[in-house]
Structure formats: C-alpha cells, structure tokens
Amino acid sequence: MLTKLNLNLLHVAVDFVSRKKTYIDSGILITAFCGIQSVSIRGNQILNDENLEFASSRNVSVS
Image (cartoon, rainbow, N blue to C red; front, side, top):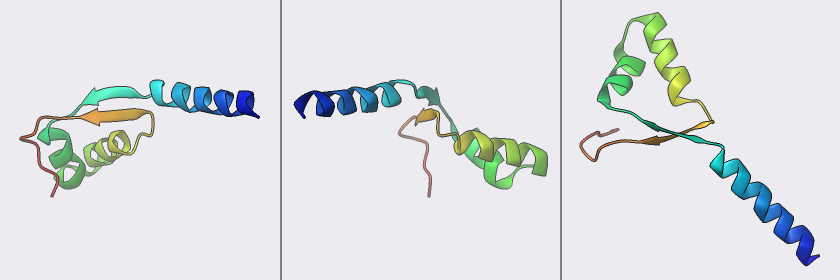
C-alpha cells in the first residue's frame, strides 16, 4: 500500500512539472477581453491553456 501511495505522489509531481511557466503582462489581459474579435479569441485561448502556469508583475491587476 505504501508503494502505491508513493507512485501516486510521483504521478502528481510529473503532472505539475510538465506545466510551462509563462510571463504575462496587462497587454494579454486587455487584448483577451477588449481586443479585436480574432485576436481576443486567441488571447482567451492562451489564458485558458491548462498546460501553462502564469506569472506576472505585482503591478498587473486582474479585477
């Protein structure tokens, strides 16, 4: 049972490591919600990508 638990923890760690860190700025947020339709759709696709982990400056606000 202990070995199975360790394998499950390893699987979770591999899933977490596979996400790519992506730095975003306010431009992608503005484009996703206020841009031209085709560009806005692409911005939303990026923001909804489950394979990306986002990072940004403290100055970028999502409110």
